[in-house]
Image 1 (cartoon, rainbow, N blue to C red):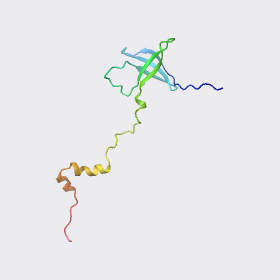
Image 2 (cartoon, rainbow, N blue to C red):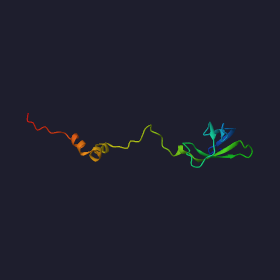
Image 3 (tube, helix red, strand yellow):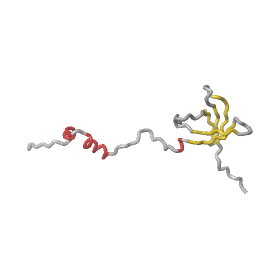
Image 4 (cartoon, rainbow, N blue to C red):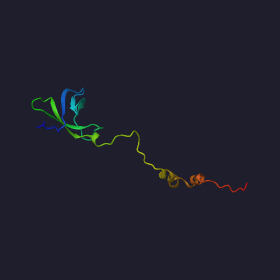
Length: 120
């Protein structure tokens, strides 16, 4: 008989102090085997999350400063990795036809090759 595998990922926060403005709390968070220093603040309706997580802290009965963390929304799970730059939205055919569609007739005439009718 082997040990029962722990399939749950432990995500725990320790509340250690209030933020300077008094609206939030500084925490130490243990998740995925790493300790992270962070701040938690109340979510306000209409304000963006700005690539932060939305979490709910569940204080433990025996130690109220230690909380189990419930992740309600995590932007990092849904966004693909960044590729450092804007998306390429134009193809070669798009660029070649741009002048034909949006340029003035005079500009299109200037780009046409001129025929040389001289015989010399």
